[in-house]
Amino acid sequence: MDAFLDRLISLALEEDLGAAGDITTDALIPVDAQGTAELIAKERLVIAGLDAFARVFERVDPSSKVELLTRDGQEVQSKALVARVRGSMRGLLTAERTALNIVQRTSGMATMAQQVMAAVRGTKLRILDTRKTSPGMRSLSKLAVKAGGAFNHRFGLFDGVLIKDNHIAAVGGSVREALRRARTNAPQLVKIEIEVTNLDQLAAALEEGADVVMLDNMDDEQIRRAVELTGGRIPLEVSGGITLERLPRLAKLGVDFVSMGALTHSARAMDLSLEIVQAH
Image (cartoon, rainbow, N blue to C red; front, top):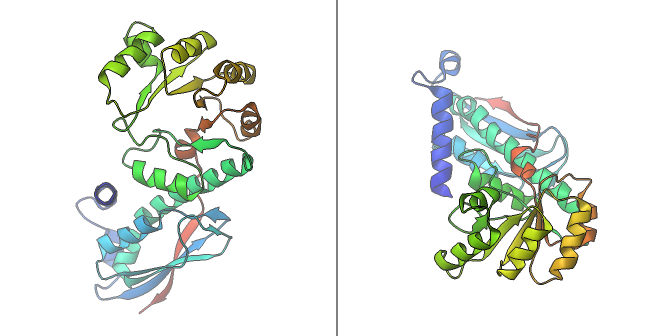
């Protein structure tokens, strides 16, 4: 996580500063000027990404001091003081946009995760994220989803077997053949999940011993029949066409998991601002 985060911050700063650096700040602010800035929530939100926020300032100005006044996963109200940063005024101004870009997006994911879990409170249904994350933001996105109270699916291609429709097409269109190859060649202690789009494929997956089945883009009636066919033998995950309004219905149908790419690819960036409150 630390290595990925450092590379992400380095790339973001390089993108923003280019070869010439922050020419506006350098033209206006003396090298020895110091200041204090405060991170303020401008709306109700669930905060996430604070460690990354702090790390940006520390990377730009190693002498900066970041005081976190909240914690990841905490719900804060509009006008709440979230964090305070003291250090070089040049460092504060140069790091501002990169730090905000991160914490606004991760807080959006955490806030959305809280909303979807509230929709299924009191049921067994777990809401999962997916690999649909911005490049380089996978670790931060996964942590943000957890901060909001939802759950992580596999992190990447390396830590779980998930046979998708294109995998099935690549082995000739057979669910059975895909599962047989996975059983033969995949690591023996790794569970095997397969995506199906109809009940015939589900029946084949059950007969071939899939550990988990993902029901892709099925309507509620198809899902109800899939739950009956499975009879609780293995967990069922639903994906595709998921909305906040649909979640309570899916919980009542008896599926175990719902995966939502929207948690990480469509969550709205939350409104936070960094305000200089003292210059000295």
